[in-house]
Amino acid sequence: MFNIKNGLVLYGPEMEPVKANVLIEDNLIVEVSPQASGGKELDAKGCIVSPSLINSHVHLGDSVAKDIGDGETIDKIVKPPHGLKHKLLSASSPQDIITSMRGSMEDMLQTGTTTMVDFREGGVEGISLIKKAGEGLPIRKIVLGRHDSFLKKFTTPLTSDAEEEIRKSSKMILSSSDGIGLSGFGEIDDEVVSIITETCAEMNKISAIHVAEYEKVQENSLKTTGKSEVERALRNDFNILIHATSPLKSDLELLKNDEKSVVCCPRSNGALSVGIPPIKEMWDRGINLLLGTDNLMFNSPNMFREMEYALKVTRGHYREYFSPVEILKMATVNAGKAFNLNLGCIEEGKLADMMIVEQLSNNPILSLINRTESKNIIGLMTDGNLVYFLR
View: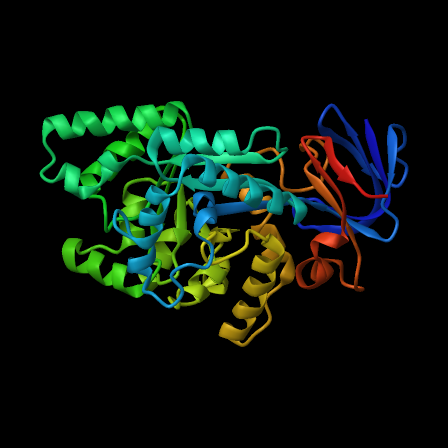
């Protein structure tokens, strides 16, 4: 049992700052009040007690290829199967990939992230690499795999044998992962996608796909199918849509009327010169928005950097105020909802995934987003277990 005392707690899904103690027992938050007592005391005086962060989209394997390919087009860098990242992954030894992924997970823990969602290339073998890389690390890994048999070159035309192979490969991936994460509609036919999402639903696993990351893929989708990538994703009933940086106005209305979540990756979009995600327009429509650092080739997995960039580029793009609370929610409570996790906010009954961070300004939300560095995080907890406490 732990008792985090004397801190400024960001309480509930709306992150209301309250002076309170937080009592944790059997991995759960059992009381948040000034009177909460008992347990091993952790003094949070002068600190913010916040939910720890959820990185909702990362390509962890690309840690082995940091800052390579700068200035190349997005297709040359990441498009499967011949993109630069895929060539580098193929040329890297399993141990090099494991070592680089483990280093990135350690970086996440040092910057307040206790849950991450990884798009895992390499089939079952790729999934096994991240499991090995994460051994002994107290970070929650949601792993979304994929298989080369899904690609067009293996499924055109879609014969009965190819269809059976896709079902078999999907079940094999899902048996060792939390779901399937697809590169995009440019590499996979809708008939194949339908089989994959149906299999995910049957096995109660997550289905996710990159959509509308840049204008060219939207144009190609409309030209070849008469539908946008967002519309195709929703028709195929994906749970999670990644990017949606270049949606049509009609896409926004479709998303408004659906309960799917969108992961925005603004730093990645900026690094690749593909645009600014329409965060405010999606938020205005009540779409559940998440945040991810995306590809380790271009970005550190630091969610504080992602939140600060997201807040400021959104305000700059729309030339009006956007609440920092909504950005923090993208990295916490919204993600907990999207992935059906009992965490993401500090309230009774939730899993105790929290961080204790020095308060560096009068505004606790902006203090977190604008000013926090790893050195300012004095305590981190996941599943009610103390990862570190530096007082």
